[in-house]
Length: 306
Image (cartoon, rainbow, N blue to C red):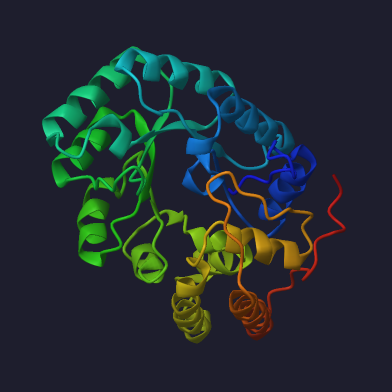
């Protein structure tokens, strides 16, 4: 999820409620609040908890909600925050690989901290996220095997962007409690066909209904042509959505009818005239894809009540 802000950069609660309903109405089967797209590193600890609680209240059990629980400090401080986040009622608290171990630390350090967190958090359901910031730390097969064998981890957001790595990880997670969610659009269809449990790409903030369609029908032989077409188009459009993200996502959703400002805490960027024209073309392309696939979703969602 992205985080809507007011003009004074406080969290816009009304827009957050509408955005939450929009994701679900567009077919999202779960929400990851308080992640990199949410500008989580620019929120205070209290805001991270409050943001999560607000979304949980709005969701009211309709779909699972996960939220990040590791933001640095000593391991004891991180464990305490994980407990606070779990107390809000999330389905799982997510651990960030690049927060738990520095870039110059080996996997033995990461594993030791994972073991300590697992031991200290009782029955709290956990997840893991290869967040690209502060740096990207991908999980090795040895760590994946430990995560699965521990029985404590239920969610993995993968950012390897490499189908060979994805295939190897899925060899561990298939038929386990650890659900695999691919964040990479170019490998989206193939990861589902290999046994992935779902998708979690940034472009799903623009048109979640297209990714929901892909997840629902990826194995439907009667829709094979449409699914291959959708995968090609999503791959082509993915390069546009990455430009000045999450600003581009907020501008796109605003064009769809959501009452969002273009305020960011992460930067003070603005879209140029050229970028606005590109976004207009993206908007038209997404509409044409929906029409081609027969997806009956409202173009404007202003009728979703706050």
